[in-house]
Amino acid sequence: MNAESDERDGVAASADPAPATGDVAGEATGDVAQGVTKDDPELGSRAPDFIKASRTLHLSWQVGVFVIGLAVVVAGVIMLPLPGPGWLVIFGGMAIWATEFVWAQLVLRWTRRKVTEAAKRALDPKVRRRNIALTVIGLVIIAVLVGIYVWKFGIVMPWKIHE
Image 1: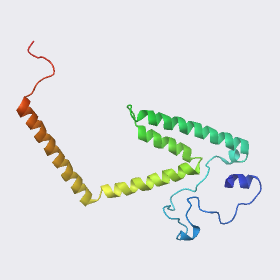
Image 2 (image 1 turned 135 degrees about the vertical axis):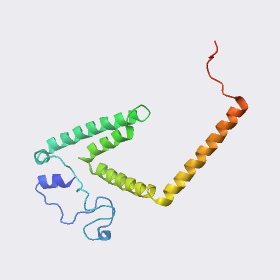
Image 3 (image 1 turned 90 degrees about the vertical axis):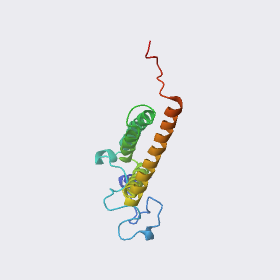
Image 4 (image 1 turned 30 degrees about the vertical axis):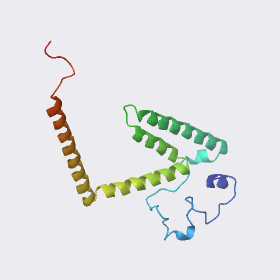
């Protein structure tokens, strides 16, 4: 059961809850757990209080959020091979799920952390120089291959212009 339901039932939650990520509580330094910054919102449902007050209403709210998030994620998956911003829509569906489900919040935190790390690595001057050098080498190889093809076979149009 979750903390909201414990509060609704009148049972007080423990003062020192176990970390949601599976980390040992003693490993955290200060009030910031490993990989979680102070800017990250608390895990759990973001439903309005009047919805959390009723278990039936909260459960139906969660089902609605899940169905809407699932529809958005499925639309994003469909957009992957078709025209459209597939990954953006998939992450939008995950954000919808993250308004209600802790597992989606943890996935989004992990994704945000990995994207930030990748951006830092990509902006590293050594990596940028290497990527530019590899791109130039690749373009030179392609230009040489196209030049050899044109020299050997000439430029042949796929249609007949002279007729």
